[in-house]
Image (cartoon, rainbow, N blue to C red):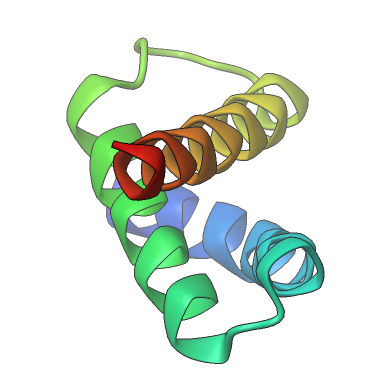
Length: 76
């Protein structure tokens, strides 16, 4: 993914993903961490040529999975 494509995707998706995680956790620092990790994982593993709407869903799925991982880790 080219830098401009990533920037456009980030600008379109970062606020809604952050708001989602913040709404679930109620903790800004957790929302910040999950958002950063979600984009990092997306950037490492995103399939080439993924349409923007699929990328948005994929980012939300990554964020949700990161939240699940945090909840599991706290239970153990």
